[in-house]
Image 1 (tube, rainbow, N blue to C red):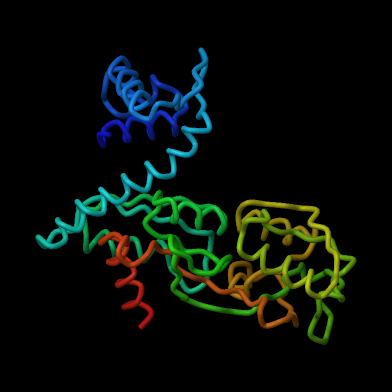
Image 2: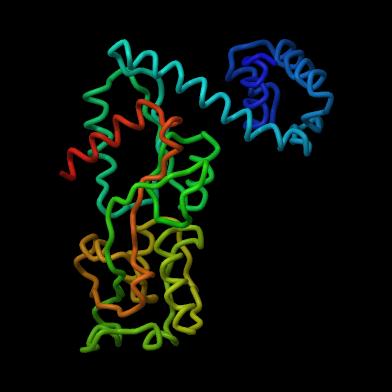
Length: 294
């Protein structure tokens, strides 16, 4: 099994199209097809279901995809480790992040990293914490900044970065704005909620807090970005339970304290592969973060 066969396989699996994958890889379509056929012969199993419009993975192809991505990530890490020993950090830093994670100034951190390591290509994607954990474990991301959603495993480890309580945000004319005491989930049982998709860290914290309090809530307005959530609150269309630092993002909104179990506090973490598999670029970024926070 050759590495180029795995590279070609992963490209076709990601693009779901031979022509697009060939263009991205700068190879001929006939050469790409021959590479995939050679891999299928070696594995004695078809990897794709081919149609005139696109290709999809077979069961065997799905089984191979995760392993192929991990192998290619390890090969990339090996090249980068050798370059790092030679005194030059090269390669790619693939970073994932939820929006507005507490304690991590992502833009400033990446700017500092680029100044220090200009030969490293930076790639950034935003997603929910559960998806980010899967991407790091599969080797598709070098690290990610997210909310703690699971315990460490053989494929994933976490470094705690920051913690903070959750707070209620609402319009200043909302009836809760004049509430004098600390709120509880039961005080919010009949409210209309604005919240993120279920995979996002703040949503997971809030869902857990209300479930443990035995309070059902309805998320009527579901968004996938912070500013969209704040805009809806600004129009008094609902309330939101969010990490406390969100209150500084929109001065026009009222912030109210919320009482809930300590286990429901919001915790930001860095998700990384096992130490031996962590890329030099990821280690360098974590070093910068530790320096900045120290």
